[in-house]
Image 1: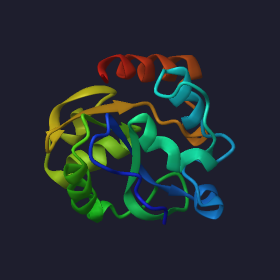
Image 2: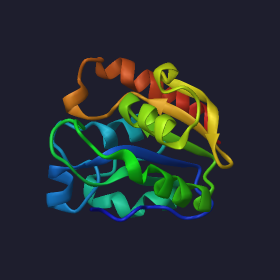
Image 3: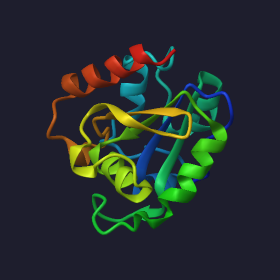
Image 4: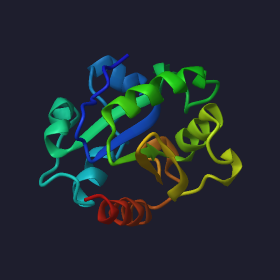
Length: 168
C-alpha cells in the first residue's frame, strides 16, 4: 500500500483502482514500465517537465494528488478487487477538497459511482461526470496503464489535455 498524496488546496486528485504490483515493489505510484501516467501528466500540461515515479511525493507542489479506491495491491488488471473501501477514500478526498477528482480509467470511475451511490455506473464514460464528490467535480480520463492499451496514446493524450484545460 502506498500513502495517499493528498492535502487541501490541490487542483486535482488522480484516483486509480489499486496500486499495481510493480508500484508496490518500487514504493512509488505508476511505476510499471508500460504505464504512461507520467508522460500523460506532463504532455497534457499538469507538470512543466516529465516527472518519474520516484518524484511522486513532489506532485502536491504542482497542485496534483494521488490516491486509489482499493488500498491493496492489484494482482491482475483490476479483476476481483474489493471496492468496499471507496467511501473511506471519498472521505479523504472530501477532506482535501480538490477542485477536481480525475478517475484514471473507466473501471475506477464506474466503481466509485457504484460504491458511493453517485450517478449510474453503466452511464459513466470518459469526460466530465454529472456528479461530484463533496465539492470536487469529477472527470474520467482514459487509463494510463499499458494493460489498457486498446486506445492509442494520441487519443488518451487528447482526453488528458481536454481535462487539463478545465482545471484552473
